[in-house]
Structures are given as structure tokens and as C-alpha cells.
Image 1 (cartoon, rainbow, N blue to C red):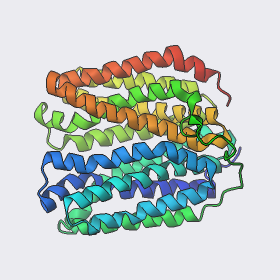
Image 2: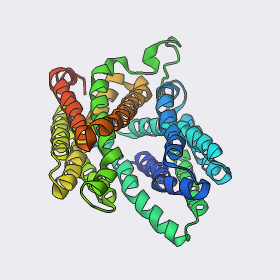
Image 3: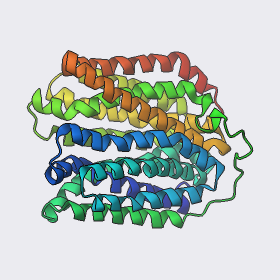
Image 4: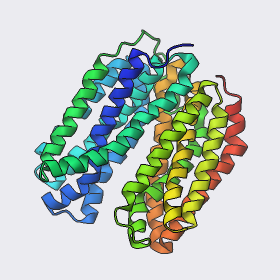
Length: 390
């Protein structure tokens, strides 16, 4: 059997962890920093931080084009370098306006780096173990998501509330990831530079529109729940600090399902994994919408994590199979764009629903859209992906 954990795969796995860790290390504390340093209100904080996500979403389709049209290692290193460099903007920003500007700009290299890194990971994987490798690759994101906030709080206390020291630390981890990525060696490959410059298929994988629409539904639901889970836990369930345990259980579900599902992906059971994930996620959102108290609140987190952990690597494998070797970057950027788009819509409409229908109405909206995505998967996506080549 071909070796999965080869040198290139180990390096890109750790490099991806370091990029996401440097990102998650400051995310949970930025609202507190803006409030204490600049006296920013809730609206100003929201606007200052929203630009990052918007910029990452806008740049992803172009990232796929760059990754497919130019040497992938070069694209990865350049984007990673800019990502590292922009951490310095947080240190230099003397007003909330400047901070918002640097934060928005930072979203571009993050979006491009994640596309480039996931594509390089696929390049260094043996084709016989590609699906399994995609599943394990996602664990680097999950570990960063769990460890980042915990380490951030610990280090902030260690630094006596010095946020600038935390920015320097994030910058250091980002630099470590950049150095590691620079040591990766890739074989020469054919690019897609001969295709028409205005072809939409260079920026979005048109053959994957069915799968992308389903991903939008699943991301929509996560956008609603992830945004309002903390305030719901505090105001309705009376749980202080509930979001920390909720997201830890969610991440635990992700990791368990990725480890368990990797074996099925190794055996090319892509449809099997996708089906299990779609069903489990729908069940998790139903449990959450039913508002069954504390036990329902936390068990839903683990179930949704299980569902997403099975579903996402399977869908990513479908996109890669549809794109082929020369459109791996476009395939990766397409699924990430679909996810970011759905996430943004979920945050937007979840806010409207919670304002007019309460949290219960917002959570039922999340389940309804997720269930619609599940039905769409069984009637449209599953028959399509079952016919895809390995």
C-alpha cells in the first residue's frame, strides 16, 4: 500500500495547522481587544471584523485560478508570506479604522493560502489514498480550532492582558508555517494556462454545481447555530461560558468522524461517507431546534460535528474527482466558496429570524434549510456523485 504520511504530506499538514492556529489564536479575543483599546461598540466591532470573512470569500475563486495556472508551491509561499506579514498591521494600527483595514486585507491571503495548501496536500498524496488523506488533513484545522482559543486565553493571562504580545505570538506561528511550507517539494505538472481567460470554469467548478448547492445549505445551518449558540446558552439556558464546551464537543465530533471515516474513504466509499454525514448533521440540527435543555444543547454539538466530519471530506473528494488533476485548485476553491457563501447567508438570515421569531425560530430555520439540503442530496447529488470516477 502507498505511504500516506510521506514527508510532503506531513509538512503541509503541520503547516496548515500552524496557519489556522495563528488565526484562531487571536479570533476569540479580538472583540475584547477592540472594546478595551479603542472603546468600540458592538456595531463597530462587527463591522471591523466582518471584512475578513468577506475578503476571504471574494478571493477564493481567483485563488483556485492562480493555483491551477501557476506553480502551486510558489503561490502557496507568496500567499503565506503576505498572510504572515499582515499580522504586523495589528501591531501598527492606532485606530479602529486602521485595524479594520488591516483585518479586511488579512482575509485575502488567508483565503488564498487555505486553497493553495489544500491543493498542495492533494498533490503530495498517493492517488490510492487521496480520500483518506483529505479526511486526515481536515484534522489539522480541527485541532487548531480547539487549541487556539484555549492557548489564547492562557497566554493573555500570562502576558498580563498584553494583546500586542499575543499578536507577536500569532505572527511567530505564522512564520513557522511559512518556513515549513517552503521546504515542500512538488513534481512538475501541466497547468491550464491554455484555457480562455474569461471562462467561468477557471474560477468555479461548474460540474460541481449540484454539490456546491448542497454545501451552501449545510453551511447556512452552521452559520445560524454557530453565531447564536453562545448568547442562547447564556440567556435561555443560564450557562456561563457555554460556547467553549459546545465548540469543543463539536470539534471532538469532527475529529472522531474524520478518523473513523478515513478508512471508508480509503476504500473509495465516498457516497457512503457523504450519506452518513448528511443524515447525522440533519439529526443534530433537529435536536438543537427542539431545545431539549442542556443535554440537547451539548449532544447536538457532538452530533453536528460527527455529521460535518463525515460529510465535508466526502464532498471535497467529489469536487476533486470532478476537477481532475489540472483543476484541483478550482475544485478546492469552489467548495470553500460554497461553504463561505452559505455561512454568510446563515449569519444574515439567522439574525433576521432571531429578531422577529426568536432564537427558536432561527434554529428551526437552520434545521429546515439543512433538511432541504439533505433531501436535495438524496434526489440530486447522490445519484450524480455515485457515477463519478474514483
